[in-house]
Every structure is written in C-alpha cells, then in structure tokens.
Image (tube, rainbow, N blue to C red; front, side):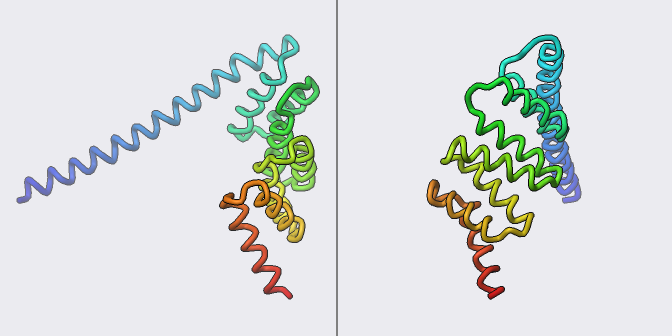
Length: 172
C-alpha cells in the first residue's frame, strides 16, 4: 500500500514538473521569437526607410514586451509612412498610452481609430474602458452601446454596459 502511494505521489510530481517545463519552454520560444523580430527589424529600420507594416510589427513586439515609449515611436513612424490598417495602429498607440495611465492620449487615439474604421469593435471597447478610468461614465456607456450595435454578442460590452448602467441607476 505504501509503495502505491509513493508511486502516485511521484507520478503527480513528475506530471506537475512536466507541465511546468512545457510552460517554461513555451515562454522561452515566445521570447526568442520576439527577440528575433527586434534583431531583424530594428537595425534595418534604423538604416533605411521601412514599410508601415514593419514599423507596426516592431511596435507590436515592443508593446508585448511592455516597452511602451519605443512602441509608440514605432507606431508613429508607421502612421507617418502611411498605408493600410491605420485604425489598428491608432488603437495600438491608444493601448500603449492606456498602459501608462495616460488616458486622455489613449482616448484621443482610440477615437482616431474609430473614425478611420467605424465598425472597429476593439477600439470602441478600449475607448469605453478608457472613459471608465477617467470616470466619464455616460461616454463609456455610449461607447459600449455602439459596440453592441455593431456586435450584439460582444460579452465585454454587454457586461461593462450592464455594470455601468447599474451604477448610474444606483446613483440617481
């Protein structure tokens, strides 16, 4: 009986260590991929004019690494270079400002993304969240309502609009 219990504990321990090892390996591969993008694009973009998509890709990697100032600089270069999908670039800039708690700048960029692409649900949800952080509840509710007009099944907008609606009702 003691031998079976020891085998069970050992099996459980090996399983847990295997899962942890797998998770660590995944994280290492993810970091290596991001570093490879930085290693490839950063020197190239310092030497020559790059494509907007290259600046966006590099900015996105900086954003995932929480290097917000560098990310914003790359996104602004993408905007300056022009191209397609500028709404995504403005949304990403807004996200970088939001992460730094610069909510006014985040709102400005989320609005720009929305103006460029009026059915851009991510930008509208982000705009609503930024308004919430600024305690601008009516504007946040309006942003979430616009999301639900575009995507009625959007769970984030449903949940946040309902929560804010309850707050407004309770306050009156």
